[in-house]
Amino acid sequence: MAQENDLSRRDLLKAAGAVTAVAAVIEGAPAIQKVKAANSQVQYGMIGTGSRGSYLLKHLKNIDSGRCVALCDIRQVALDRGVQTIGNNPQTYKDYHELLDRKDIDAVFVITPLFAHYPITRDVLLSGRHVFCEKCLVFKPDEVHSLRALANDRPKQILQTGLQRRYSTFYQTVKNMVDAGVLGNVHHIHAQWHRNMINKPSSLWTMKPGGPSNIENWRLYRQFSGGLTAELTSHQVDVSDWMFGSSPEFVMGLGSLDTLKDGRDVYDNIQLIYRYPNGRKMTYSSISTNQFLPYFNGQRPEMGEIIMGTEGTVQITVGDDVHLPVAWWYREPPKTTTVTPAAKKTTPFDAGATMVATGGANGPYPIMTGDLQMTGKESFLDREVKFARRWLYSKGVFEQEENRNPVDVELEGFFESCRTGKHPRADLEKGLADSVAVILSNLAMDEGRKVYFSEMEKMGTGAESVRKTE
Ligand SMILES: NC(=O)c1ccc[n+]([C@@H]2O[C@H](COP(=O)([O-])OP(=O)(O)OC[C@H]3O[C@@H](n4cnc5c(N)ncnc54)[C@H](O)[C@@H]3O)[C@@H](O)[C@H]2O)c1
Image (cartoon, rainbow, N blue to C red):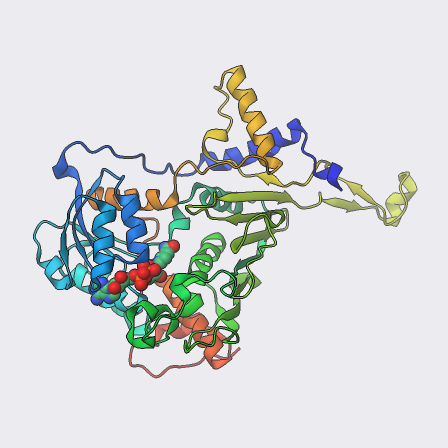
């Protein structure tokens, strides 16, 4: 009922207070470092200045703690775009080995297609540099084992992977809500990333002339790419691993190519079920023919996650250059006490009737981070303004911006780690776990079977693959 969803100011304060409490324990995102001395800046190069590389350069341009000195791409057009974006005239290369030969580089961004992540990341590590490699960190089972061994041999070199949700204060708040039991026992997560590639084609997923021999088509062929699973699911299975605090035990799935039959050989729609320890599950869907997202009253398209516990639910999605991040919290119906026949004699209630333990609306409550949190130190006017903005937010009239774009936070965090040795949030093991999930999900769909995550221990090692059965 609309009335029940109507938040009173007291309810809002109570709800926001609880979330503010969990938000308060979030490790603070690194503040923007206004590095004055050039020699305290991390000097970096980037290999792969295509779509994502240029996007990152646009953000890197405004981050003082790093300085771009070299760019590399095998395509001149991408290289030119990179140089134009960063704007400080870095040296350019077509062969990444030449970039790695420079003596003045501390760190390297690897933003190439998935199949080229491992060989380049390996060479960067062997050259003694810190590395930021976009997701998915690796492509093949043998690369999982090789990169782990290589990186573990070089503990002083930072390895970070591009899982930016880990750097979002909205997602960190939700993780703290899960850990603090605010949502009760979280047994189920559902995530989707749906797109309508028929009505709204994406240049990255559109077949260009030349088929597999055109590097711009790399996403569309299995020899280079993990398809939708690698490009989209990877972000969300990482969220699910994070919320559940573990990797899945097994995955089952159905993938097929039904609509975008233009020569590509990756699936255009996938459905996956992951089982985690203690029977918890993540169900997942990515389709290419419809972009509707049934969260946030249908106000947002494409992607999001819904985290369901015995005491509450959170719907969440990350922001991008166009959309702001959103997180809504719903409470479950309050606990009820069944009145037993014995109790009936002494109570005025009917047998089987229920008593509501606590009352109140069940949401949605906007999850607040940053400047809408009540600190208790606000002036009267500031407090009233915050209440007003929160109320407008709860009505969908006002959108709250995440304090920082998580991409900026991840990039600044990387430079901070390079300078101080601080362990990155999206580290080697997070990146590898994510890659393993992608590899095994595709295997489950290709072979039409339940694939256990323990199978990865033998895969790619040369040892006979042992399939575990139930
Ligand atoms: N974190 C995110 O949200 C996010 C978003 C988009 C893409 N990505 C990831 O970023 C990576 C790149 O994706 P993209 O969309 O930029 O692809 P893209 O095709 O637009 O760009 C890749 C670039 O790498 C270049 N390249 C290929 N091989 C190379 C080599 N050996 N040396 C130098 N350059 C080489 C290509 O010429 C191209 O310009 C992928 O792994 C993708 O999954 C991450």
